[in-house]
Length: 81
Image (cartoon, rainbow, N blue to C red; front, side, top):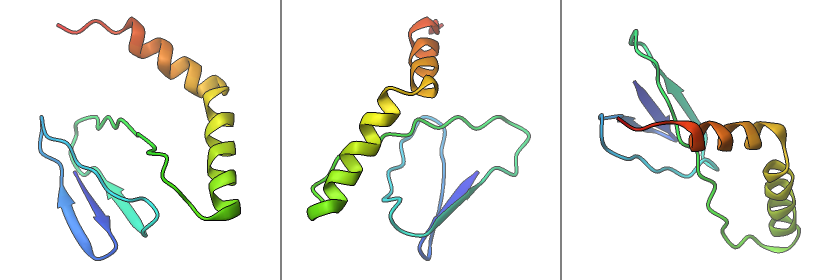
């Protein structure tokens, strides 16, 4: 399981975190037989002018989406063993 961001390749290690800036060209792969689960967090960062307005607008739309609600419900209903 790995990811390439720009020209840097990283591998995921179980129990560790990996952060990257998705504004750079990137790709990820899973060549294992295991399921890969990702927690995607969008950090709101200051962007100039209309880009900042657009970013906040898209985030507000996602918060109201069915996909976000279903994901949130699944997290709340998941029992940690």
